[in-house]
Image (cartoon, rainbow, N blue to C red):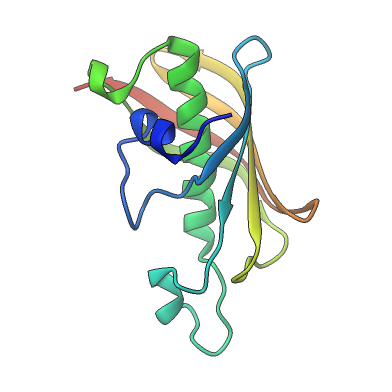
Amino acid sequence: MMDINEIREYLPHRYPFLLVDRVVDINVETKTISAYKNVSVNEPFFTGHFPACPIMPGVLIIEAMAQAAGILGFKMLDLKPADGTLYYFVGCDKLRFRLPVTPGDRLVLEARFLSTKRSVWKFACRASVEGKEVCAAEIICAERKV
């Protein structure tokens, strides 16, 4: 398990773009991670998306999955951003949205490492609320030295 203080060591993101609140399980041997984001009505994006019917923007769900995958990648390499490595989100395949995410939801984020080739990493990712899949995609990240 990783709390927010440890997560901040593995992700360069900060408010309002740090979208992982807690890592529940991470296993370098099976190359998997399970984390979550508590979705609050106080999120800044809800003031404009959509005020009368607040829905978490899909691109932020994708970003949350990518951040969970990034933590997994860092753990697999036994590195942190402070070591001079970052992961950049470069794309996704097989993206599907199934249900909206609204204030009060706990967005569960799961990622599984699929492959790496020339510093380009691919992860199978899934986001769910109360056991129901809300989004799934293969997230592609590029590892870069900074």
